[in-house]
Amino acid sequence: MKANVHHVYILHCVDGTLYCGYTTDVDRRVAEHNGEGKVPGARYTSGRRPVRLVYQESFATRSEAQKREAEIKKLSKQRKLQLAKGW
Image (cartoon, rainbow, N blue to C red; front, top):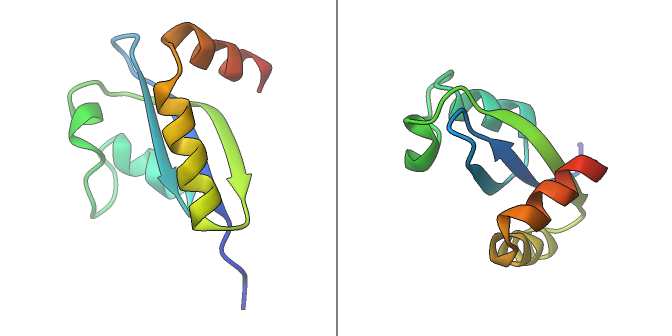
C-alpha cells in the first residue's frame, strides 16, 4: 500500500491572481481546477481558468501540509511569486 503524500500548491490564474491549496494528488487537483473530472475546482478558480501549477511542496502528514498552506496564504503576492520563481 502506497503511503499518502500531502501537498501544498500554488496556482497562477489567467487573471494574474494566485491560489494556494492542499491535496494528496496535485495532477488530479489541477485538472479539477481547470474544469476536468467529476469534482469541480475551487469556486475561486472556476472563473479564472485556465490555471497552471507554479509551486508545490510535499509533506509526510496532512497536519504539516495544512500548517504550511496557512503560512503561505498569509504571505504577500510578491513573496508567493518569489517562492514560485525558486521552484
